Length: 422
Image (tube, rainbow, N blue to C red; front, top):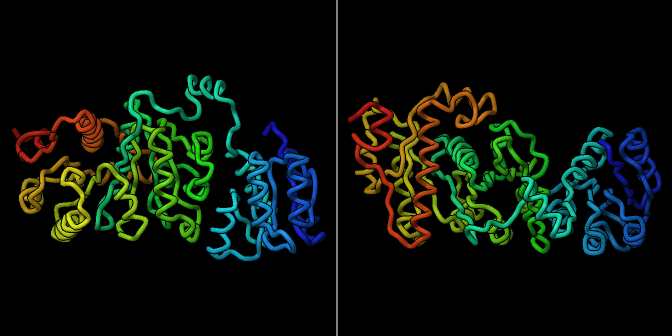
C-alpha cells in the first residue's frame, strides 16, 4: 500500500492508547499522528489533523465515543471512525454505526485484527471528488453515475417460502446475466444474518449493507460507490453483514431510504431474500417492482407457493407483481411444469432445468454458471433467457403496454426446447 494511513487514537486510559500504538508501530503504511484522552480533545484534534482513521473508545467521561463520533462525522466527514469497546452487544453496534462508525472492534483485540480493520476501512473510505472529476471517472468505468435512460431502476426480489429452492443461485446468476448484458446491476444479499452470496461468488465481504443503512443522512452516489464491491463480471454487490448480530442495525425505515438512493444509480437491483417473512423481508418485497417466486416440482413447494399467493393478495400486491419460476425443472417428475401452472392458476414465467452437477460445481468453485465454463449448459442458457425476458417485460411495462412473457405451454417456449419437445 503506497499511501500512509494517518491514525488518531482516542481512549481515556493512557496505557490503552499506548498498547494500541504499539500494535501499529511496525506497520510501514500506518502512522499514529496523535492521541486523545477525551471526546472533546478528539473532536479538536480531528479538526486540526484531519486523520484518515480514528480509533475511538466508546466509554469515556464527558463526551463519550458515540457523541464524539457524531460530531466528527459532521465536522470532518473524510475521517473514518472505528469504535473500540469491551461491549459487543447489538445495541452498542447499532449506536456506533448510527454515529457514523465504519467498523467495530471488541476489546481485547490482537494486532492482526486491528491492522486489518484499519486497512479495510481506509480502503473503502468514501471518495471525495468534485462533480467534474466524478464525471471523468465515470467515463472510464469507475464509480457510479446516474442513468440517463430511466429515472429509476427496477427492484426485483428473488424469493421462495421454502428453503433450499435455489433462490441464491438464481439471484446471483440472474444479476450476473443482466450485468453481462451491459445493464447497471446491483445484487443485494438480503439474507442479513446468514447470507451466502459472498461465498458463492468467491468475494470477501469487506463492506456490507450496514455501512449504508446506518448512514441515511448522508447517503449519496459516492458513499454507495465506496461500499459496494465489484465482481469481475461487472456486477456490483452489496454484501450481508459480516456478523449475524449486526443485522439488528438494519431497520425497515433505513431500507426504504436506501432504496430511494439506489434506484437512480442502477437499471436493476436484484435482491436475494430469506425464506422467513419477518419485517425486513416484507419491506424488501414491498419495495420490489417484481417478485420472482421460486418453486419446485414437489407438493411442499407448491403448498408454500400457494400460501404466498394468498399472502400477496392480502397485501394487495397486483397479480403482475409476482412472477412464478420453476427451478430444477425436469420432465421426469410426476408433477409437470404445466400441472404447476394449472394447480396454482398462475402462468409460469420461466422454467430453469435441473442440472445438479453443474450448479453444485459452480457453487463449490465460487463461479456463477452464466459466467464460468458452464455458459453453454442448458441451466445457464435458461437463466440468461430469464434475464432477457425480465428486461423485455419491464421495458414493455414501463412504456404502459400490456406484455406477457408467460410460458405455460409444455410443448413450446424455452422449456419445451430444452427438453426436446415439439
